[in-house]
Image 1 (cartoon, rainbow, N blue to C red):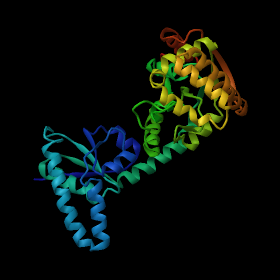
Image 2 (image 1 turned 30 degrees about the horizontal axis):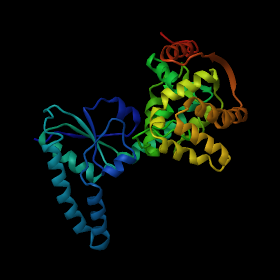
Image 3 (image 1 turned 90 degrees about the vertical axis):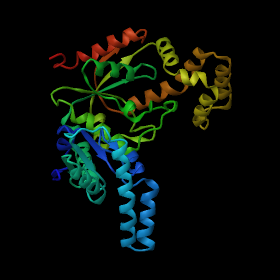
Image 4 (image 1 turned 120 degrees about the vertical axis):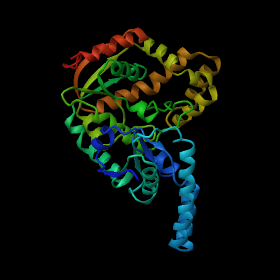
Length: 357
């Protein structure tokens, strides 16, 4: 006897808090890469090429032939998943399955799972309904939270301090971590590509859902883009009216910290020079020759110092002056080494009246 197939309303509370053993996205790898439910695995019933092929048959031949060819592909792919990815799943395994609209692709997998005896749930409305829920949270949640923006000149270890604060239990949105980019001209993470915009938004949404509105949320001061990723509009608006804490560190400490934090740039001179080329329209040829000489000779103290003083510090000053913010605290740093970063994170914790409770 087949096991029952249930349908689940696509609210985030239902999807993320119900506790399914596995969340399965049966859409194509390209669809999955664009965005997916947090924690989902991709077991496509049609891969990228197969999906395109079925679409071509549908348009150029007729819907019947497309359905017949598609059914054969789906059956083969599901069989492969059963033999490989799902081979060790126990009798009491309970998955949630979804596709684009909660229709044929997820239904085909759910039917086979049901025949096996697995109690399966289909996401009503599929990814499309999930996406609507994400957009609602992104619009509705930021105004309910009290944000504290952590600011400071480039090299003041803001991201590291926030990550240490999160490890101590503070509520933190790590925009640079979620966007896989450091938010500056030299901010691309080595060996990593940024997520797609919608996937970034899903991650931000999942983080915000976990917050207690009675406690502050700490977030780094950023422009409205982190690399190529846009900060969601309501979150960006909330950041613009948030209280501000500034990390104040001496130039010497920032120079030393940046050298520790960007070893990949120091190891690849051509990568660094290429990244700096984005500034050629703003500064003189003589300055670029000076920077290149420091890079090639390994004079990193002077290179970092001149880049900070010429570009980053003036940019920060302009940006800070353009934003009206309620400055509530300045945290003074001296060395920005690992020990002090922990100390600075605990300084932030003093701004959370419920910390430790």
